[in-house]
Image 1 (cartoon, rainbow, N blue to C red):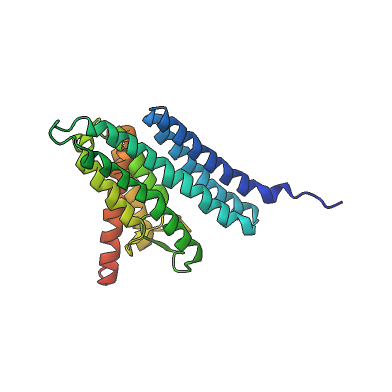
Image 2 (cartoon, one colour):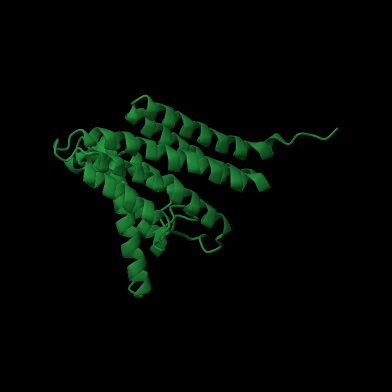
Length: 243
């Protein structure tokens, strides 16, 4: 009788917890609780980080692990944040002037379902791309999910996020960023020395902490915007041999 290697199943179990959190997020959105929906995405992101970490620590790999991870990410970081934005756009639509509340404008919110579609494309590319070991090409799906998922929370402090058109444009812009050729910084530290890449990572962490202290849960969209700007600035200077 073959011996069951429990250790080998731990990373995939954690990945499944990521998927379950994504499902809870979707359920919370359907129930109208967008704050809990966003928090479930954070939980999914934590499990998404831990599954890879546990696989490296336990030195176990499986053929199914990479595929399972991407399938879970499509749900947790593609479908779940889209549901939050869709519900939020429905709320923002009701605040438009009555003259603008016509079917054409109302139906524009369905464009946000480009997010899960392009998330799936981005994840499929990542699985076969050997160039994304040090940096990401395109916005990572967890970062995109945190930006979109916490727009309702950020609207309490940033009034622009109450605007139907602004939220719609941001959602579509970030959907395109998923499959864009823009180089994005990876936050995975291989060491903690003050290398050029690590300095950019430390700067992002510092900005994130400051914004979180000021804006609490509403800080996530601002942090992701900072992540985008720092990544563009860093890679621009690197290409110009300034750094």
